[in-house]
Length: 454
Image (cartoon, rainbow, N blue to C red; front, top):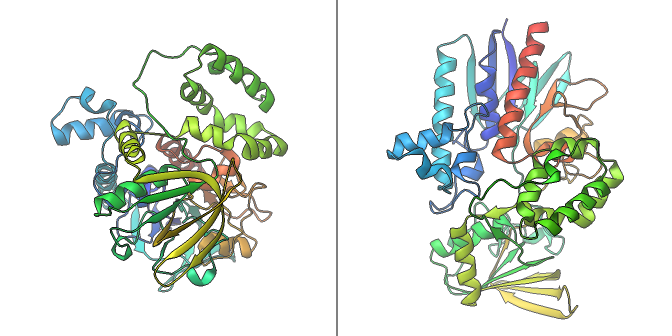
């Protein structure tokens, strides 16, 4: 009798989990659901334009934690270059997508010659209902009975700002999906507004320009523009942060961090990287009050040091700012009035508190992926929440999950597991490839051990 597993999400996490599950000696039927035909790469690695680069050097992007050169070797073989050519290079995001697609094809071939079966299904999962010892999964076209289910849903679309009326969510003047901008609906010589000044904004600007947009780009975010470029690798930083042990209190870390900043005033990113290596263990030991304090007062500062972009991308933005074709403002939007041919935007400047207004022809939501599963929508996560199957973490960053085995918290001990950004409330840093690949490997082993006990 085969064990039936459903994986919701066919991006990196879902596809790599399926790959590692093939190590099981039990016979498996793996059903992997994706809203897109391109399994394995997810929306992050099928960019709208080929010039968008990874925000991490190729040497850190292997899909396998025990084969750190796997991606670089793939690039070397494909381009007939030496390893050093690519190790510190920021390659195209779509090229990384091709790498993941090849791994997915290999996974299907491995399954075909083994006792396992992988069935990719393009479509939206509507319901997962525990019933009579199994999980009943439903889409518009089918119903399956599963023994286990894994939520590997990837990034959700950004939450619509409260200043946009529900009737305007589908307006031709608004792009709610920043990874699929409605470029065909944007006049090339008018002004646009980007909401948010993070990594998504950087991509959106390049997509607009690559599609012939020559108008002015406005950007408004609470803190303005703080993104910095990656620096050239230097000698390994010697810091006390490397040797901290858990549990450790938040204010102890802050005190030590400030001490180290006095010694290394230009190395905030390196210091954060040292902390990030242990961020899961540190965050897990924080009290709710410490996590809440971090989110309210330190989250943005962490992001500034943590999220860097390639020097090439940074140079593009600096040219835009110097040429005044890009204006980034720190402030709070107070109203947006969608009209037939324009959008009137009102906002308050952060420092001066002055009231300002803009008239633009299109608004693009670059505020980042939504994380609150309690917000009503037609997605599977909200469905599971409404049915009392999953719970939001106290800060509404993801799902309450036992990070020791990735199983969701439930009184009924449902055989449902979670990966990736859904663990943000439990681990904080859980979206980069180096974190996701380890989670996939660990969860696969947890499930295989569970199979063997049955």
